[in-house]
Every structure is written in C-alpha cells, then in structure tokens.
Amino acid sequence: MRVVIAPDKFKGTLSSVEAAAAMGEGVLAVYPDAVVTAVPVADGGEGTLDAALTAGAQPRTARVRGPLGRDVTAVWALEGHTALIETARASGLALLEPTPGTALDATSYGSGQLIGEALDAGARTIILGIGGSAMTDGGSGALAALGLKILDRDGVPVPPGGAGLMHAASLDAAGLDPRLAEVDLRIAADVTNPLLGRVGTVAVFSGQKGAGPAEMPVLEAALTNWAELLKSTTGVDVDVPGAGAAGGFPSGFLAFTGASLNPGFELLSAFTGLDAALTRCDLVLTGEGSLDEQSRYGKAPLAVAARARDAGIPVVAVAGRITLTPDQLEEYGIVAAVSLLDVVQRPQDAMEQAAKYVAQATRQVLEGA
Image (cartoon, rainbow, N blue to C red; front, side, top):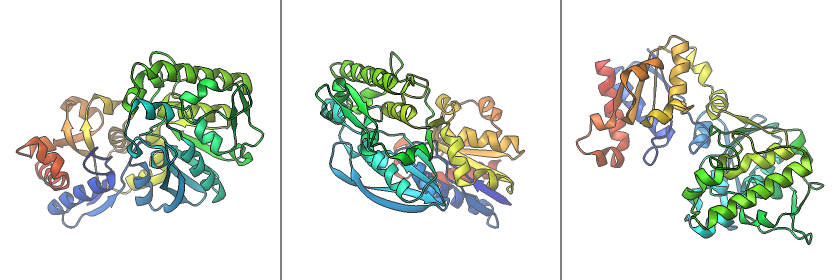
C-alpha cells in the first residue's frame, strides 16, 4: 500500500511536519509494509516554510529588521530559481507582544529585506506566505527596504509602521529595486478582505495585533491615505479583495510591482509536489487542529481531500476536533475521520501530548475503516 500523508499544522501543538510524522507512525502500526510519503501542506500561513523545507527546498538565513526595528534572524527557502518567504519570520506577530503601541508601529521592513535576499540569490519566482503578520502598514515597510521613499510634506521619510502613513505625502520610486519588475512575485492570500472599510484589514484583523478603539481609526485613516497616494502615484486602485491580508501587505506591491494574489494552497501544493505524490498512492491522510466550517473556505486539508477525491483516491482525516458532519466530510471524499477528542480522556491531553494521540487516533481510524 502506498500512502500519502498531507496534514496542515495542529495549531498550538504540532507543526505540519510533526503531525505528518505522528500520522505516519499510526499508519505503519496498522500497515507495516506501507510505503509512506509525507507531504506536509500549508495555505500561506505559519508552517508554510516548514512544508517547503520538508519538500526539499534549501534553507537560507538572513539577519533582518524585526517588526519593531530590532534585528532578527529569519529563515527562507530556495529551490532552483524559486524562493519561498514566510513574512512572519521577519515581521510576525510571534516576534512581539501585541499592544496598542506595537499595532501602530510594527513594520514589514524585514520582509522586504528577505525579498532582497531572494533577488540577490537569483530568484526568478518569489512565493510570499503572509500569514501571522504583526504589521498594519500596507507593505510600506517592505517597499521601503527595497528602495521606495515614502516622504512627508517636508520631504522627510515618514516613521515606520502603519501610523506613519498618516503623514505620507509623496512617493519616490526612483530607487526601487529594478529587479522587482522582472521577478514573478506571487502572494499567498486566502482571505478576500479589501484594504479599507468595515470588512477591511483594520476592522477585521488589527485587534489581534493589539489595536484598540483609539488605534483603529488612526490605522484606517493612515491606510486610506496610503491607498490614495498609491493610486495618485501609480494609477492602481489597491482597495481590492485580498489586499487586506497581512495588514494590507499586498497593497503596495500591487501598485508598484506585477505581484499577483493567489490561493495559498494552490501555490504550496505545486511547490511541495503534492500533485505528483497523488499520482502514485492508494490512500491519503490529511488533517489539522480543527476541521470546521472555516476549513471549507480554502483551507489546506479539505483542499487536499478534494484533490484526492477527484483522482479517485480515498481520504482519511485526523484532526484535533471535528465539527463538520459526516455528510459534509463525504463531499470532499473523506471516507473516515477521527477527532483527538474521541481518543483522549481529558481534552488537555490532546494539547499536552498531541503527537502521541495523533498516532493513536490514526491507528484507530485505520483499523476501523
């Protein structure tokens, strides 16, 4: 039997790589002669880089500016002429304590530095996974790192961070890295939120980054100014679906480069070789921390299942919890599923010993399938 194991992360407990290893242990306990291929998946959020490295991409390391200006060491990946960057490694929420002040000041500058590193390494395609961001700066910091000058009315560079865009009056792109015009820049953005308004990036996402009632109007006004300045400078309207991802990060790149917004799973499945793996297997296992209604909107595990279903391959799912009905799971070709909550005595056990119970749950569902 040939088995492909393609889970996303179990958030807060296991990375996609660790989840795949635990599920593989469960598979081999039931089918000791199985040929197991692990293809951890991601949708552009945290875990994207790990999935790429597991697929064989080569790790690169750079010292870059963190979201609040302090240098951090960030890993990115290169496979041939394709680079994969997880912006959270340079500009992520995990790198700071979310407060009202950090919500105003966090910058994507370090992510721009990573793009520069990829260009220096000869990348012709750059895939940007932008989940887990700390900033709400419209990508202005990243573009500044790549040579864009964002100036106030006196011709002085504005302060970094979203709030600084309140003072932006002109944009000087003369020094912008010319290689940006030649590279295929693909942004993995699964959310469809626009940049501005009641379902825009500030209204929906800035609260988790520390913004409160006093900061949200400031950030909304700052990004409104940014969008108007981008349009007057480049002619591009950046208040479009998807531009609100990662604190509006795509907006600046949509204006100044040929960047495209893409479903994260589609980008990553091609990069990690999932499609090729599916052509030579008899069973697929997938899963994540929670299989729920949100999973139906482009999340990686159900996308994996649908792709296997279309290829006529049965799918088994293992998740921390499952709130989807059997009929809903069956729509995606999932023939059997198990929640860790079905095999633990206490819910906290699923968090504290996740790998053990993922392996146990995998074994249990395969024995009963």
